[in-house]
Length: 112
Length: 114
Image 1 (cartoon, rainbow over the protein chains, first blue to last red):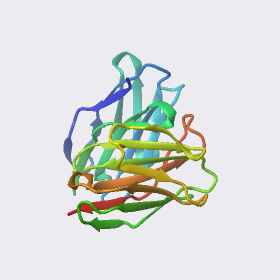
Image 2 (image 1 turned 45 degrees about the vertical axis):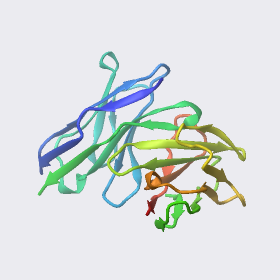
Image 3 (image 1 turned 90 degrees about the vertical axis):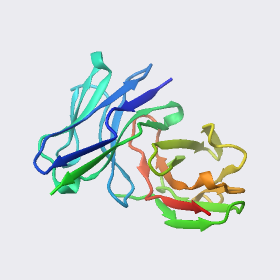
Image 4 (image 1 turned 90 degrees about the horizontal axis):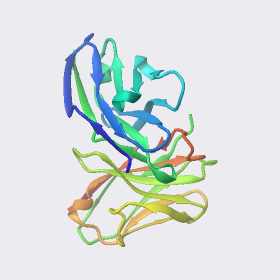
């Protein structure tokens, strides 16, 4: 069965620090991977997705993620975080029938 | 960008009462979903709906839950007799085709069961 795990529950960084959030997946079929973000008081938004091709995927707001097949990983990165990046970040893989299976989420707090 | 809208944004109810959470998916979308997020926990899949019937449901989606598309635009989630543990943020989502496309999420309804 498909599953996804996120290693960090809560990450606290200062502005301008670099970010890397871990995501590992277990998936039997063609790999499609997603990162969603939920800003405080707002709904989930898609940050980026990987379907095929270049394993380094660039998303919105300066985020990127690298698909490493040998490590079953899809870690989210940003070279320099801002206070406005404070949010919860969810890694996800497709289930059957088009639904998404989410990880437990990583809360990012950026100190100004 | 088109939006999925959900109403109300916050619903407070007494244990044992029925609640209906409403969603208006994006107009040309064909597949609809309900998810929930209990505070501090992960987002959980509840049910998917296509062609006026449930296509898949999770273990959480027991007999107390039902979904309906009553009029071709609304997509509702009904909880027949709410329990304290039903308190959560409920998200509606829709998609035109389930093949590797972006799910559009609503802003959620925070359900508080007292």
